[in-house]
Amino acid sequence: MIFGGSFDPTHAGHKALLAAAAREIKPDITHVFPAYQSPFKERSATPFELRMKMAENAFKNIPARLIFDNFEYKCQKKTFAHELIEHVQKIYDRPEIFMLVGTDALNEIPAWKNPDLILKNATIVSGRRGGAARGKPPLKYYALKTPMPEISSSQIRLQIMLAGKAGAEAGPSANIINKHRLYYLNLHDWLKKNLKKERYEHTLAVAEMSVKLAKANGADPERAALAALLHDSGKSMDGKALAAYAKKHSIKPPFYNLICVNAPELLHSYVSARMAQKLFGVSDKIILNAVERHTLGALGMGLYDKILYVADIASKDRKYKGAAALRALAFKNLDAAMLAAARVKLVFTADAGKWLCPQGYIVWNHLLKKF
Image (spheres, rainbow, N blue to C red):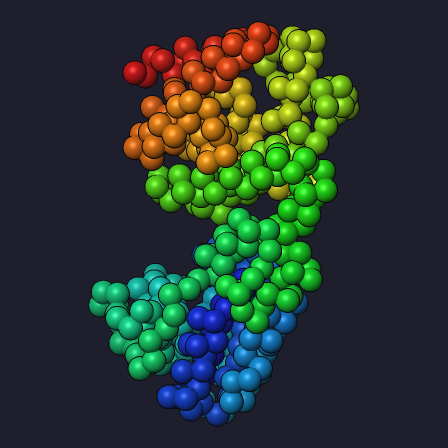
């Protein structure tokens, strides 16, 4: 039997699926293939060897003969399901091959590379999440009798990012995740060390709301969460240090000279974006843009920009008059919430007798035209 996946991280669902297949199919040997890079995903930031360890640790008590195969790592490229079949066929003499897949993959197999070769040379085996099939898959397969738990690697990664630790949700992978500070636990460590307690708690609140807004608007919750965790890292510096950092790294936002003279603390969003690159290796331009624009905004802001801009001013830790109404509005109409958030920023700044950056009212006027 073949069981491939990113295992990023390995979780109770993977273990339940493999254990059920071992009981029902009773294969002589099962090859477990952690992916080097899934054909349908970006390459994982989690090192292959750690994902292999998580799989070995999670599956060690399953009563079956398992071979943890590093074939994909040796290939050093995207590897497709039909290549795993061909690899196994070279090892054994006319093997009967079963390919174990998750429930979500059933509907995707016809779109995989060389699906006819896969279906001709292997019997597809899959579990059923929640005890019920989700639609009728467009292919024949063996359905395992044991219902699978409702869990996914992406859900676990998100929980870890929001909590700042790996707990029971990560199951047997928790120790490896915590030890190696995976899934941005290293970022949490840095934030706890360099931000004031209230600022770190605000960051967590913004991340929580960003995730909710992402889900409500069809965005990637992990992307939104990471942008939120990074957004105030520049707050670790005072205005003088921010100006020095901006000068050193040639960061020049709109009205840069005026900002340096009148309110250098406004540089923190631009500095945070650069720190995300230099300290945490973030290269995703969508995330970096959201971090950069969360304070003063910009013309033509994208979905993730809007999510962070609104979440920053409407997170649950915000207690000003009207905060609850803005939170509610954010889930009804994100663009309307953008306008309301821009107004809150301008009014707060004016009421505090502080300098108003021209970028703030340029964005306000731009948003106002839409309503």
